[in-house]
Length: 370
Image (cartoon, rainbow, N blue to C red; front, side):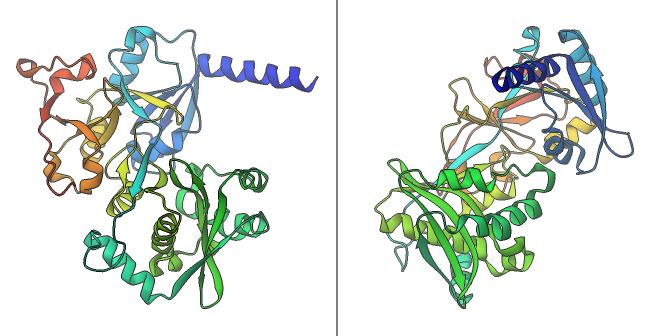
């Protein structure tokens, strides 16, 4: 009976995704976007596209979504987001595909300290802050730490930083993770007080950082450098274990994302784009005022023809403040034009047909990348 109930719930959810869409509007109602095949991503796109965490939602019902009706929504709002496989077949060559998240990994340098250590200036400043702050670490095994970490560190930190966008594990799920081979917990202490930590796993392909948190999600601990301490000690621990890299996990797929920049300043490089986070298909109308503002503010990481990372940006590569190690993982760069120019239309199949007159390809400068 339980299995039958779960199957019915799954079918009901699938049917809803096929026949329900939402219109997400700003509190004033002046701007909005359409979302097909999901409900939770509205928080993420509300922040990015509307520039606000607060929004209003109107649910719409439809039969099989048509390309014509979706193009109308795009003209009305500037953006239609498709989750999963909800994109109408006739629109597949018009949508821009972006991954749910991008992964980064930090290569372990030959030297961690001294004149041979090649850290960026920003990373050097963070390392000095960690040292001045008196942070230290130890390594815990087993699962005795899980309940307290989840309740006092992990859950409040994720809620404080990501609000409704937070996607967290339960304490039970986290405890199950500790049973994996190579699992361990790196605990951060200061003046004898446990102030932060990160659940990690030593795996054949590198040292994997999975879930982190700091005491109470306190903003002051962030200012004091507790997250920098977690990254610095993860790197040192990975080096002790003989790993070549620290897999530091996911960040949002745009170059202005603060977490992506933070990971990049430690030398973090883009990993091959993964399908495990799913993807969003964006139907964009760059002539729409709200869409133009969105594209001007976000350099989007998209999936290229070979599954590689490409970027769409309103600026040239030299005009975007992105760590060189992140830029090294970008294969091609397309810059948005102020207005469409049919005379310079690209022929690259990876660029959606509806956007080819809106972009030009820019050369990528690899200076500073070894």
